[in-house]
Image 1 (cartoon, rainbow, N blue to C red):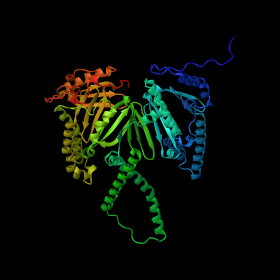
Image 2: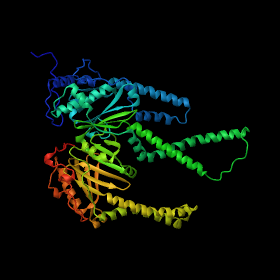
Image 3: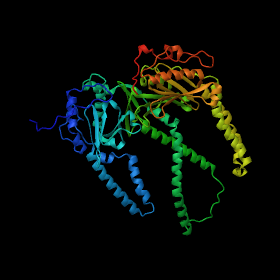
Image 4: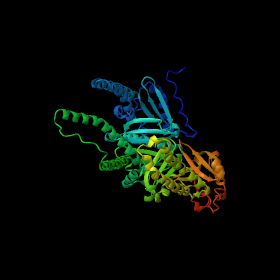
Length: 598
């Protein structure tokens, strides 16, 4: 006789990627409960079962009620206000305010409904998020595919003890797969810890007790950037070059708005007889006033750059917890990112000429995913050059730092001279020929007066070309491929060989005549490249062949050390790029190879 009871729940979903995980009894119970309540989720109703202390997130829950207001991204709020403001520019002020009030009320109602219909849960294997007002959306992320769980705390959110959670996978690019804005801060930390514990369990590691987990979360201190280094990074970085233009544009806008008002006030004072005297004659700019204004603008730019950098990168800290790097930064708004070491795709060490003189460098880490920043990047604002190798050894296990790099042949100097002198020569030709061919373009004679100064570009660019040539170098070990280039700003790029996706060799007409080749090493991620510029033809061919073997193999390919780089076209003796101990690469049989998964 058939039973009148409900059918048994379906079995729990298999772990993605063939992890081979066998859920325990608690896993099966949580998965069965989740499967039995899926229809309730799709209808927007959350179960009211008691919370399991062992699995606090197994029962679907809503975001914090403050997410109705604090969960709106600033960019989205600005976009919502642009239309009513632009649409009523020519209308009375009361109409603009009325339209803004209507938009605010509608937005508040939509946010309330979205908060009511949005739930999330995590049963130890799958992170589920259900949302939607008219149409329901159900998103499931297997814990084995989660790469980043980032916690962000804005200034206002920190006051109320709240935080936002961003969950990333390999294919999420710059946008998160799941963005929970906002939840209590303790829930955000607990959810991240639960995801990490489940990932450790999938790897077959034993689960420690709560006290051990809390001690393990502290991890090992890898790097702490002092506030003084953050200030130095602000005054020696590219941000200082952008701020004067922004501040100048803002001052010009203010001047354009205030100028007509001041002129109108002066005209009214003259009509009323409150202003007497003759109108002064303008004879030209007061260069002392111009110099004071320029100095004030420069000082304002430096102060603004320092304030922005301190607020963004203050308290910068990197900790290592097992196979992950925990990066935290920020004063008012804090941001905590997790960089799995097995997901590191590319590391760039950058030094502009000011930082080279001061002995500092900036390190940029690119990882698969995207929660670490734009295009999945984490940037260490500044650290001494002597600390670079130690940091690299933490980011890339078994790599002692920048490997031995081999210089490029003398023919590369001709290419560097061509690259740097071509634009300078064109500019000199324009300055000298323009007043002759088109006399009307230089009625005041300014271009003719600038000719001697423009000629100085030729020796300056020639010196920069020599500097660039002296910096050109590359190296290859059993674990990493590295390349160095640049003149004013020198960049050393390193990528694990197991992350190499493809290799491209380019030879222009001039390069073929000089026996040079440019090798592009493609790794995962947008714009992630290791560019070996103007290498010798034979060395480039060997490098291409070795890296092609790595790209075709899921594990590092080890070949005899003498085949790694070989002598360059200079005829000077070169050390092997991999294999020997003095090349700062451990033998393959004595080290643990990185995880080959992307």
